[in-house]
Length: 101
Picture 1 (tube, helix red, strand yellow):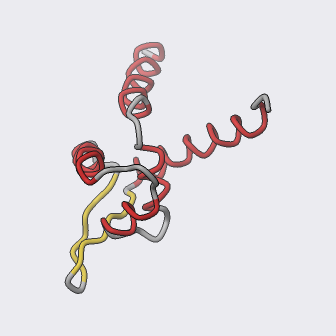
Picture 2 (spheres, one colour):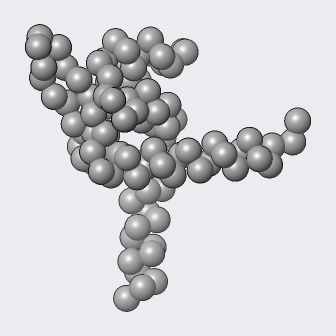
C-alpha cells in the first residue's frame, strides 16, 4: 500500500540522511567521480577513519561504487547516490533560501 511504501522509502533515506558527512562525501564525488585523496582533501575536518566509515556505508547501500582505473581507485555515484545528492542539493537550496542571517 502507498503508506507503507512511503514509510519504507523515508526510512531508507532517513538512515543515510542522519549520518554526518554523507552529504559532503556525495557532493565531493560529484558527477565526475573522485579518488579517496580528492574526497578527503575537499572536506575540511574529515578524518581518514570517518571517510572510510562513510564510504563503507555508501558502498554497502549501493549509493557509490569503487572503480579501479590506471593504478588508482575512483569512487563514482550510482543512481541511488545521485538521487541522494539531488535531495541534499534541495536541502542546501532551502537552507540558503530560508536561513535567518
